[in-house]
Amino acid sequence: MEDSPRLLLALSPPAERCVERLLFDEQSPLSIVASALDGTDLDRLAAEHEPDVVLLSPDLPALSAARCARLRASGIRLVGLALDGASASALSAFGVDAVVDRYADLEQLRAELAGPTRGTAQSAEPRPAGIDEPRGRRAERGSILAVVGSRGAPGASECAASLAALAQERWPTALVECDLLGGGLDLRLAADGHDGSLLGLVRACSAGDGALGELLERWLVRRPGWPPVLLAPPEPWEPIDELAQPGAVATALRALAHAVPLVICDVGFLLEEGGEPTPLARSHREALTCASAVLLVIGARDRQVRDGLAQLDLLRVELEIPNERLRVVCSGLGGPGTGPTRQLAQMLAERLAERGLALDATLPFDGRALRRAERRGTPLAVARRRGAYARALARLLDQLFLPVALAIPRERKLRLPLPAWSASAKEVVAPWRTR
Image (cartoon, rainbow, N blue to C red; front, top):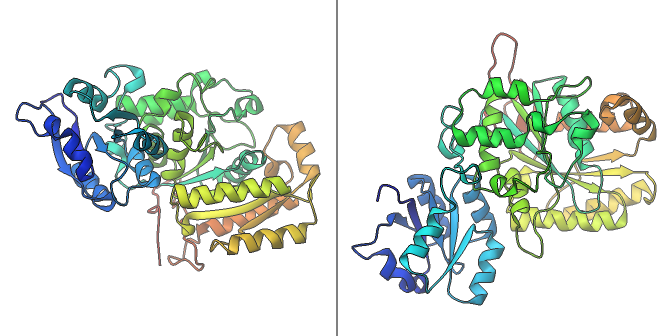
């Protein structure tokens, strides 16, 4: 019993009847902490009992992919119970970690609930003792801003880098490469991800290493014109199972937000494949789920606009990120292959208005900044500080954060608080303030 994971049930009555012989037998070694009647009840019970694993069925009322993603981001393993082929497909769409069928015996069920063999690096549980509270449920001290693009739309990674570079001039900031598709920051910085990366931070949190500050000093890449950068693993597809463990990425980012007031994440665009979240997509989703705000970068070409709006709908509907946490910018206006700037901005504003959103910024194509950035090896906004691109990002930065003397948002959207930091007292304002 001591080795049994704490189990929270989230089964519909028909599903529960199929496995009640395994769950409630007197000889059953399973450690059941509670049973949820619906998705809303599931959230409450998970917060109260902090289970290790949830056994769920796809027909549970009010269960959604977004709710499953939030549970995984808190470090809870999800195991689905499939009654037939249709429910097995539904469970895959929910992004569960494992699926058992109705005919499984007790040993098979216990094996799936326990997950991979404990003690291996691939299955280390993200509970960073000494760095953060278990499962990262304590509110992070700093703010996490996730920047994400869409398929075929360049500009998201550059936006994240330039935004972090401008923010670093005001407050301590870290840029984290959460793009596991191969963002290429290591090449731009002439750095080796083997010397320290997001994977190292994940493993440190999993091992409960309390010396996070000392490790970060070794892992963060520092270059002139750049903020401190935490690179993605050199070959992210090799440790992807480790990065996709429940809560691995979210716990690492929250732990980093305790050490650095502002964390800006460059997140890969891939959030699903064939309608299902793959391990790589799960890692990207987890970074978005734990973020204080999400900035979506849409390209300026026709196809990029369509793909960007589809990505926006996935963020709003599939991941249930509320509008007040979403920011939308259009990048590359006036660049090669784009239409008239005013017409494009008006069309995009209309499409966003249908979704209850507004265009937060337009980032123009700046050829001179691009050429300087290629020569100097710096982000665009730093390469030409008085250029149109840098000025637009500076205005966006002002809109993202609350002024120091103002505690109430002036706009409809929630605004991140400025990290209250000085050389003598490193304190961080609480991550969110609402009306």
